[in-house]
Length: 304
Image 1 (cartoon, rainbow, N blue to C red):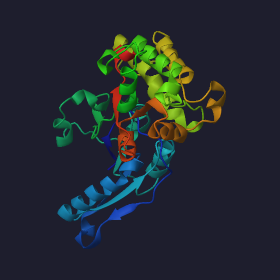
Image 2 (image 1 turned 45 degrees about the vertical axis):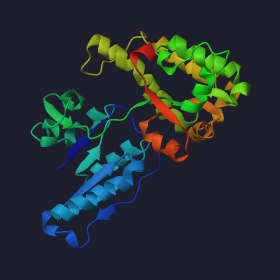
Image 3 (image 1 turned 90 degrees about the horizontal axis):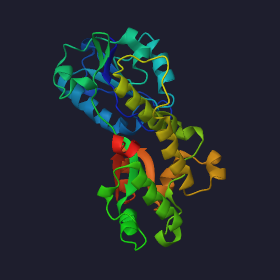
Image 4 (image 1 turned 30 degrees about the vertical axis):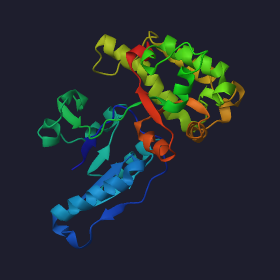
């Protein structure tokens, strides 16, 4: 009964606490057909899930209940919900916590959703059991304001003249350093938004950014099961880019302890910084505020 329908390649944004169940039923519901309970960590997509659930209920007569929990409280919420008699039928899981819930997975290897994947490597397995099949792929990396970055390219003092040239860390650092040195001329407070140390930024840096070094090590070693230890082969890369975040930032290092994720998002939306580490889930937030932007997904050339 307890099935897994989602795994993510990049972890979701920080959001709110557990949401109330949203029941999609009405006159179309046939109680004899049972119901579906979906617990998701994607708070920002609750409206879309509700719309999809309503269409499913209208077509099948099966009631769908939807609940959401933010990514920073999701695992505890899931644990609590799975202990109930009416546990989730479907629930989100990330590749970081996949092995925590193996007792609850139904084998999805025979399902159409698994067979229809363009790349079955994205599915998560526990031995031969296909426990998770992705229904969405997200990306996180460095988001940049196109208008501000073009202003840098057009400046006489800029060493780099096109975004296509920023394909390695050395070049990225050159761009950020020069923007920081000319921030008054650029009309910004810093190259990067504030890399706050409070708990709202844990996902960005302690999870998303830190996992890049782990990914490349696992790739080099051909790892398929989580090892007990990792080496420091790529740790220096992690340090280098985080040093860039805090040295070329909108605020001095002494203020980072109290800076929040909301501060960083606000700085970027107001055009006070050129760069922000975030993910594809944030695009709508900044599009609404009319900040022209694009996102670099972290790749080996930028990282290494």
